[in-house]
Length: 621
Image 1 (cartoon, rainbow, N blue to C red):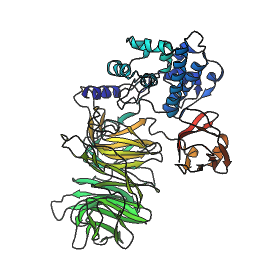
Image 2: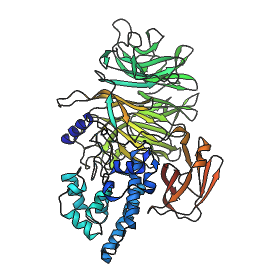
Image 3: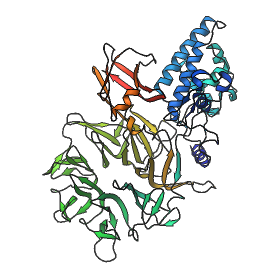
Image 4: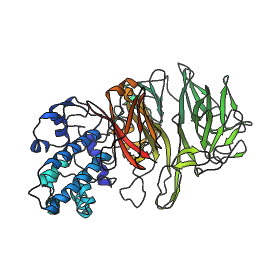
């Protein structure tokens, strides 16, 4: 595990791409894109026909998928008269497997190298195309041997006689296997803001009015520039806010009514400790919301609310700002509030409490404007402390403490279904009994496609400890396909996530210099400058697909309907076979009628003249 992590760090020091790398978005020939994925194209096919047409891709996953599709089609067209009947049959079976593989679009993730390189099987058990064919044909032991001994080798570099023997018995040449095998670009590239911060980053919040991002925490420098616990970041430039924050703990921040508010706990040598700081345009003003820390700030129906572990004679752990005065919200909670969010015309609170307003409401409660109500009375409950709540407008997510052991998982991440069903728990994770450090999720971010998760948890290479596919302390949930994907491996908890100026930022306690005798790469705050996992389609191509699962019809609604005029919609089954379906163009996009197609999983593809724009799964009930 340590050696792998060191390799990852060394990889980050290398250039992201070679000097002549062709990025997926480059407008160049399809042949040039295919050579970038696999140099064997130069030995297998000459550039002609559609291969010399100009093409571009949204990301490297789409480009690898096109590579495998073209290779599969060409291999099907090659003569097989020289093969025995058994070889020809097995070759056809393997090409069918290859088609299913590229249609699914789940490929190994290059988490440890900063150059394009093969991964026979990645850290999370995903095999490359050649590895997949070996496994599916009953030769998993051969695939695992290559994974263990030469995981980053190209096929022509692998010395094991079992591989050419398998190729011959299944009707392939070794050169054809080498052509199938792609290299994988770095999943994402991380860097500090300059040289990074000199201590923990607790908070990153966007100002929706001018696009600046507030960064706050324990640091006194970012990029070797003095900042006393707080800085504004815009257009790759850092600026100060007055003389900064007093020493203390930063927990929450928000831009409200034209100014910044920061919640936490700020001890004072004279008088009561402050728990709220308000920016007046020149300096930070100390304010008090009861006695105790403020953990969360939220806006609901145009008003500002605070939650935490503060109390007064009349106020317990949750309050509302009313004409400049903090007032209690009902009788409050019997334990700390860590999360507040506006959702479905209600203010939802999460925390460690068992009661809200005197009503039993374990960990989650709702304020309807008059009183607190238990949020979940009938369905599956949340059974551990809630640290963060996120509303996407239509969905409500909760993140929090992770506990339990194998077969007895408690919380971590959940999505609200309805009053009858309750909470849908999204993680299958448990801690080894020897792990004593607490595990939890502290921040969630939704970018319209995926859910990003930050906190303190670990994914050892050994799969007998946990069963989810996370990196350490951060991960991504693909909401469309319900796949949990790894992100980075920061060596300490991640406290905050933000998207700013088209890039993703992570802040926390991590520092990536380990024992390596190199300059620190990432100190406490990092940004993602590349990576298909956070690349999104241009906004004008955004499509909403509903309902999914599908009963009889499914609609593809475009925010900008005019773009749909240049697109075509196709439907495929799990084997990659294109299906006949009734597809009607409508003013806002497409309507697809499933007709007599049986229940199951299908794939849609939206295509333009330039190449695939979008793909995904449809579930027919």
